Amino acid sequence: MKPLFKGIDCLSLKVDDLEAAIAFYTGKLGQELRWKTPTSAGLGFPDGESELVLHTEQRPPGTDLLVESVSDAVRRFTEAGGSLAYGPVDIPVGSFAIVTDPWGNRLTILDLSKGTYLVDADRNVTGVDG
Image (cartoon, rainbow, N blue to C red; front, side, top):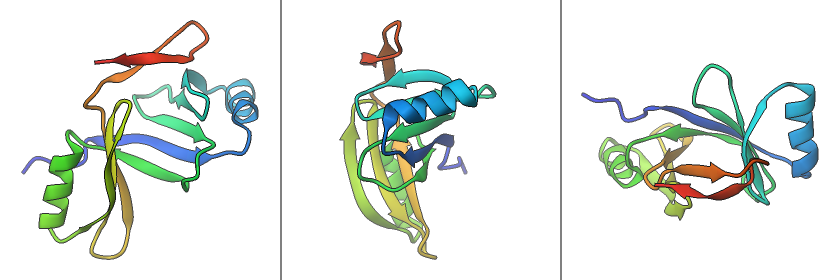
């Protein structure tokens, strides 16, 4: 059977001041700024595709698990005995949903079905390649 989860897309952290958080994580801790929007920023890990995502949005910190297709993953997850807590919701790069396993653990799942962010020289998001 093919695994449902492809890997970890990101660890997402809520911050009050995005620019200060970017300065802390890049300037003082050495993480690489990959992309930035007015409300969030993706910082790279040197060993892979996963990111540390800083955001000012009203959502709790969490870990987003990457799947091929959120709609297919929700169907497979719920058929296996889990439940859908929220979504699916379209986002610029794909879609996401929150599911709950039979033990009450909430998991955020995400697909990149629309592509990945395109950025300018300052790492500001200018669009999506896909």
